[in-house]
Length: 525
Image 1 (tube, rainbow, N blue to C red):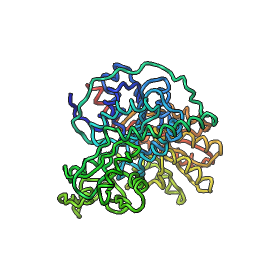
Image 2: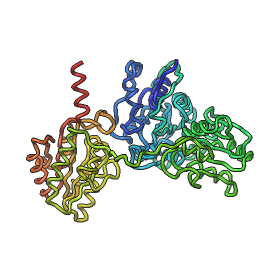
Image 3: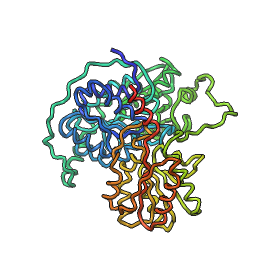
């Protein structure tokens, strides 16, 4: 049977049909649709496959590892920056090993369509010394789920599956298979206690598995060689394989790479038949650097580092064709007289009223700074509000405001969303409480995870209790309703809490205008 699926949907269905028992994730573009697909799939509901959103990527990774410990197959999903959040658990999972198959899905975002950086998750797989799969199309994304779970259980290690935005969010026909049964509960009898004495022994075992991982890559059905009588050799990684074939068709002398560690023998055999190699990979020059080491300094290797491909941004059929010396037709260039249309907060959004109130109050404080965070409310940095001084990473608003206040800055205001607060803001607030920092924290609560489409927010209806539990004084946890008619009250509350010499929290609460509309439509049906 064939289905027309997004790359994310192919991964999700592949996982379900491979006997998945649980998906653990925090929403983040371009990975969000994987968990949503599993949540809504009839078989997943029938089987009771766990699919509730997690508080952050670290809790997701740890819960997935726990399911693996119990002998069942688990998938953990995140965008690339989520790998930073779960890194402690992820790196250590390579040392503990796994029992039930465990796949760590990292959705990278070259060109930063909705991200703060272009980091490449293949580095994490290499860092942890575990295999990485990188599909070139939606069919491979589907097939790699069953293959990856089997490989994970065979090696006793987690497997990274790395996709990029173009694959995650494009559709293709996918041939699907019959669903497999879930694994039976069979908790591990091995010791997963990483005391140094045990961890040292387990690390030796991980090193001993490297030859098996290399052999798996050498024999992988996803790594293949195509020969042609041309002197330019090509290493096409993941989605890049499609762009190469679009330009060259069958006239390509290449090794397709979709499983790591690198298939070194295939690469060396290609190099022997060619005068030079061109490495085409979406993301950072991971393979280009490794191949230079494999072939030695004297062999010419080209790619992003040499300028044959752009150093930044995602690959396209056009820049790949140019690197291959092919004309690929006219490249689309926007008309010079077109006005830019940057994204804006939705009309009617409660965040708008929050920024309006903040700007009114802070106009009386010329030295103020507002430390922002990750979410749709980050758009407050743009016109017409231009309210934010910083936005660095999830949860940084509170701790940066604290550090600035420690330096003597006044007033130091942090604005953070409800989902981001539970993701990674709570610990920063505890630091501020313990230090009696002179900061004002605004938790702009729209009762959902708005930036990624309205998923459940982990702390809904718990924020006052969380802040009180962390030690914020009762009289300085204030709740307001962000509406234009309430502007006098909101500005008064903000002014009072800025003048308080200590930690105060203001919670403007009003449902996201988008989820409100969806809920209203649902009630009418």
